[in-house]
Image (cartoon, rainbow, N blue to C red; front, side, top):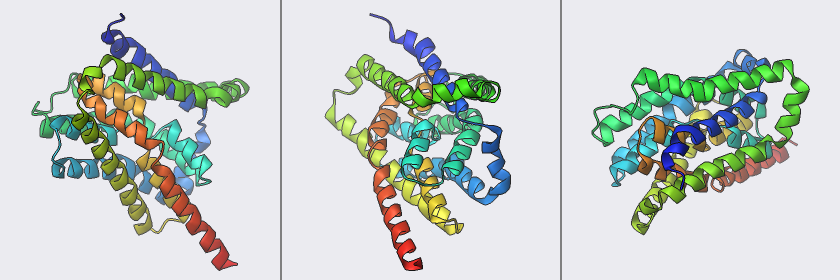
Length: 296
């Protein structure tokens, strides 16, 4: 049997690299210019993703009577901002796709700074490792930059100089990305089945993941409402905050923390991520329909 170290050391980083290249193919310079045209919406969404959400996860981890590994997983999951899945849900929900893409673009470039910071803090608070990750903060940032920022930039360069090729690849990329994420999830589960045999442990992770998602999406909706954003922008930010990059979270669990048991929380979160956001989408679309009828 192929050792799990092969996957964590080579296959998973390569998988995330491919996913992030595909994300870059969907981006153009215009996606970043939204920061100049609608700075409040972008800054509210970005601060909700990179600051508010990890803080909510820290508070939740402190309050919940769960295993320290679950607490660390909560913070790690919160620190992995949305990717292609959140954009796809935003598109299907008919929310603000331009805002979703801009938030994905910016958070993907900043994750190499924010994720090592929050991961180190989680280790310090919950796993008593004195904030020491498997890699130093600088090495962790560089490792994540190679796995996230570099491929995004490559994808954007291909989109810039070979737009026809990029669009042709994008037509099939979403299904490929889903398949690659499933590959990471199923492989991780298979090689770590002994960590999932205890039903109490599984339910603890699922319950904590559900609490994080619900808290994150409600908090994001209220936060965006406080800043008086439109309902489409509020829905977009709610989706972007609630739907995370499972691939990056799994990669961080293995490469930064060096602990596959922390990956149980992201795996549970990935299952819920397919279902729970749609409750918020349905509620927002009903609100938009009511507002439209009232206006007419």
